Length: 244
Image (tube, rainbow, N blue to C red; front, side, top):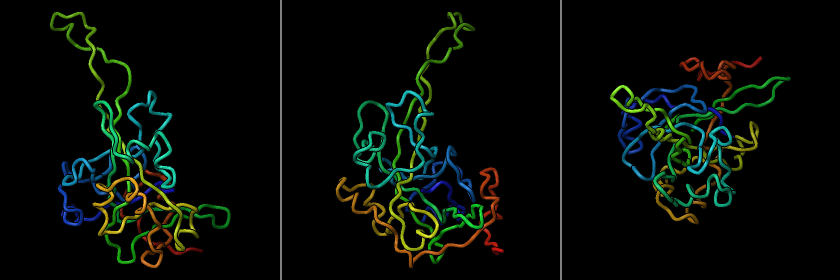
């Protein structure tokens, strides 16, 4: 799986790399975690880098806590109701779904070492930016909110629609030789020259993109267990440590 990642390159570099402009101020993340609002490039606005909360919630969900999947298995995207519409870019009603790119410069995996979990940071061999395959969906909480029109002569019971929540998930696949030593799944890293294809291709072609990235073009190194706590979000998190 992919449960943490990083994106702290200069915003200008990210914009140039993905040929898209940030919609809002960029916040570097050394320890990006579920439920945080993080940058994505959506199929519906490929020239914009906006944000969504990590943990997809399909539009038809009644209760957010029953979903919030941070990962989606590549092998079953077309089968699972939670992911199918987004993968097939099929939308009914006013809430939208689709595919997205999730920009990153590294992600973390944990492996067992002497009775404890040792975190590793995984990057491309040249430390360059990359895009993980993602799906996004809009979700609106059920229920109503009490209005304030009693102060303007109303009865105070006006109903307003809750705000739409933008959410996303990262697609995972079988691990390559490098990641297999750390975990049985890995995030789908898209080939740089086919990233836009993920956003626009028909489902059959898109499925073909969901292959393990070549292990020989990646590297992994141990980092401090401070990454275990998502509140630790500083440059120290990505520094290599010596194992005892």
